[in-house]
Length: 264
Image 1 (cartoon, rainbow, N blue to C red):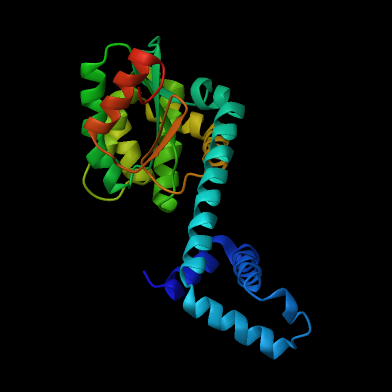
Image 2 (image 1 turned 180 degrees about the vertical axis):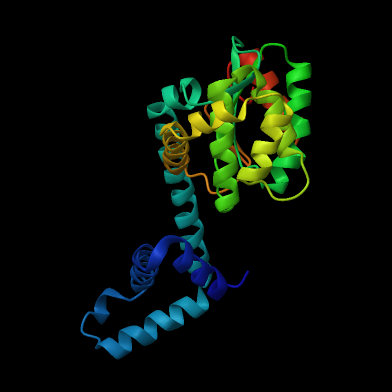
């Protein structure tokens, strides 16, 4: 990537003020090349010297952008770690969540998902295999409808299912997630009835504030963790974004089991 492209990228990613600070830093560094005897130079002369310095030493800009990127990533990671610590109870032990696998398992994997997310559908097989291969694994599912109104409606029905018959949630979850076509209120309700639930009970549960409060809780949690899409996972003190596949998730589960961290 060219320096100009990287500078533009920095302005987009970090904002005008922060990226401008980098350019200011570059100018200061460049000014250091001006001899002490040249204190009385006018503005145009200084600008010429700085321009010539940058043309002769373009790596200064590259170094500044690299440093900005490193500091930003460190800040984001630190903020995420703090959010994980502050929100650990609602993240792992909220009453507004569904649990698959071993409810008493010593290892917990949290998944944020959307019923209309194609990547979540493909990642479902990873979850099934993880449960089969790890009897001590507890999987917490967070309804995170980010793909439109249909996703919100499907999540509302799912919350009602978990409230009315949590023992049926796993069957419902798989049925709705793996169905073809758009997930919405109608399709979610059909799956719920197909697994043997009572429509009147579900309608009553949906009339309460529980669905809205559950989804709002997840939105707030995802915002604190910096999550922008699905699927996203939390395991141990690590946030994993995207459908990374069974092998990578299993390696983190194994490491957490063996040494208490997601990488040994």
